[in-house]
Image (cartoon, rainbow, N blue to C red; front, side, top):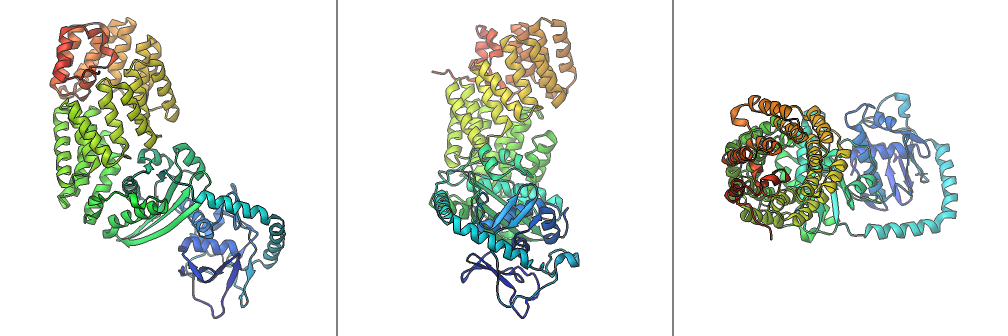
Length: 639
């Protein structure tokens, strides 16, 4: 495929290297007589490198010549993609390059012998015109002496190293046939000129992950973990090692009006070997079809094509472009996990539904948002949980095989209806539909933990951890399960390990401080709670935690002062009696603690499901009022 680099000359301007022939004017690359597909920007990069074979060309110069500026938006990611695609089509190995050598922190050099084919015309070097390598720009002049010097030196190397290359080729072929069992999709790079399109590239990354997760037998890393690599300069082997995957998918998305182009490539993690690359063009209305096509092609490349789920109801459904865009915006804000982000996300999900009333995924997004609003005390549970349930039921009515909706409904069934058996059935159903959905394993682990089934809970959260290894909340819940199982040393170790990933993550700071409360290290607990206050603000959970620490330390007056601040500093509808009950339990006022727990149950505070296992209430377990509460909530008795 030509890349439109300019008017064709009357005499061919071509070079040959190995069994490839490159037309320097059109960018057409052939292997023997077969046309090799190379996209426009990678073709331009290859032309520049080949025309100056043996020379080191910096990344900045490549950017200036190909993109027209060394500060071009996202040129770093675009250049990385171009280099990877060149290596893919040339079947080159970055560690043992035959063609393209990387010079760390400097640039690249084309090292293969280059033969100038008869009839080549000299053209004026780009440096003399001071113009970028654009659609109509000139191709740089071949540096003849340097090319022949490179040929001579390389021929000598070939004569002495042919046996080594044979062994390397055999080794590479063997590696390319190794099975791929796990994969990560790195955030698609937004190549559009409009930075406001970031929600679009983020949303498509999420949807591609969801599509690939339908592949049976393939472990797909969740978006929370891969999002940390957005804009990262880390090499593929390092990323693959950190995520624990066999292969990486990376790509770009470019949108111009209603036209879009998605480029994707599959790379073996350990060896950085390029296995496949493809480009997909279409209209915005084709987006869902293109997403499924990309996922199928990737699955086919890794040998799982026959295992793709037959359920593609959501992907096959025709969704209007405006509705789909509003859904993507909704998920973009939902992923922020702030109160403002969750509420903004709900607005966009509702807009999507107004335009397309049968949009199941948008209803699932609303359900997820209301659950988070209730769990993080941003909204009264008696208001938020029923809205979440209604949205989840509507989503399942539209698409009975939607794992996200099954998970949302299961979680509401646990948190609001206190029905462990039905919640477990729904969680298992969600996992059967999509074993790669980390949130299903995560929330199911909480269901098992609160039922007192700690070993099963730990196994389930560790599965979520495999799918989302860099998720702070998933790693936090690993420690939480140890904590609820009275394994405080292991809990503290896990919390500290999680804080190495993000030292200012308030939920883990709070949980670490709570673990110190149980070991009697109250002063260290206060240090952690103060860190959480600095990181996350003076919210109700922080105040409750500080009051508990002072109560257990014997500072009753300070504990009561904070308790009064907690009661008077919030709207009555948002007072969490759960937080107040923890303070009274720490003060040893059992009757008041039990009364606050009854009020929390009346308000349907989700975390009331923890009363059966939480160590904070161990001093209440022999009290009849507390036992009555456990029966009311329906706490399962673990065998």
